Image 1 (cartoon, rainbow over the protein chains, first blue to last red):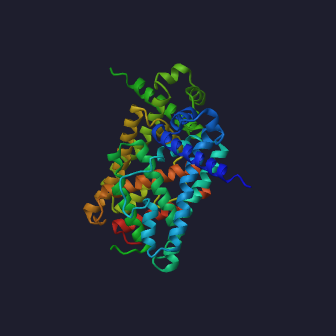
Image 2: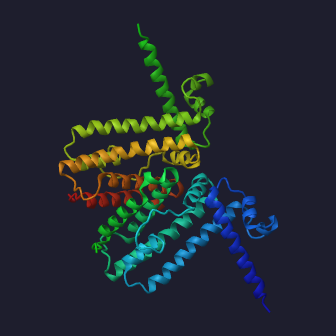
Length: 206
Length: 206
C-alpha cells in the first residue's frame, strides 16, 4: 500500500510552513528574515523546518513559486470559460477584482530585495528569469486569446503589451517599496495603465 | 581678495573625483564599491577623497545629484525655446535622442540597489523621495507646458502621465538589472511607452 496518509500529512505540513514563512517575510523583508524567525512563527523545531527547506533562499523561492503557479493555473482555468477577455485581463492584473485598488502585493518589496541583491548570483538570476517568463506568460495568454477572438485589436504584438504590464507593475512595486504610499498614487497609476491598455488593445470604454 | 583660483580648483577636483566614482560604481555596483576603490581609480590619497565626501553614501548621493540636476536645468533651458513639446519630451526621456534605443542608464542598477537595500533607513528614504520628486518634475513640466500650449490633450492630468513615465522607466531599470538584455526588449518596450503617451496626450503619429 502506498503511504497515502503520510504523503498528505507531509504536504499539509509544508503548506503550513509556507504560510508561516509568508507572514514573516512580509513583516521583515528577505534580508532581515532568518530561518529561526520562521521556526518560531510556525512553532516547529529546527529539524521540522530543515526537513522541508534547505535554507532561507530555498524557502523564499518555494513561497514565490507557490503563489505564481496558483495564479498561472487559475488563469488557464479561467481562459477556458472566459466570456470577456478584457474582464479576465483585469482580474488577472488586479487579483480577482476587475478594478484597481491601492493594494500592492505585500511580498513585493521582499521579492525586489531578493532579486536585486542577488543579481550577480547565477542561480538566482536563472530563477529570476523563470519567474519573469511565467509572470509574462500569464498576461500574454490572455491578451493573445483576446486578439485571436477579435475582442482585442492585434495592432500591437500581444507579447509586447504583456511585457509592458510586467514592466509597469515592477516599477510600481519598486516605487512603492521605496516611497510613502501617498506619493506613488498606486490606484491612479493603475487606472492610467488600464487606460493605456484599452487604447492599445482597442477596447471601448464602457 | 576672494580665493578665486582655489575655489575653482576645488570645484574641478571634486568634479574629477565624481567622474572617477561614476566609473567605479558602474563597474561594481553600490554595495561592492569601497572608498578605497574610488581612491585608486582617482589616484588620490585617503585624505584627498575624504576632504570632499564623508563616506560612500555621501559620495553616491553626490553622483546621483549631479546627474539629475544637470538634467533638470537642461530641461528648464530647453522649455523656454521649445517649438515642439512632444520632441522635447522624447529628448528628455531618451537623453538627447528623440528615438528610444536599447541603452539603459549604466548607473541604474547601482541606484536600485542603493534605494532598495536602504529602504528602512530614514535618511535614504527622504533622499529617495527628493530624487523621485525631481525626476517627476522634469517630465511634468514638459507635459504641462505642452497641455497649456494646446499641443497635448489635457484629458489626463499631466502629473499622472509624468508619473507613469517614471514608473515605466523604474520597471525597465529593474528588469534590466536582473534579466539578460535580450529578455527585456528595452527598445521595443520604450517604443510601446512612446505609443502609450501619444495616445494619452493626443499626439498624432507623424
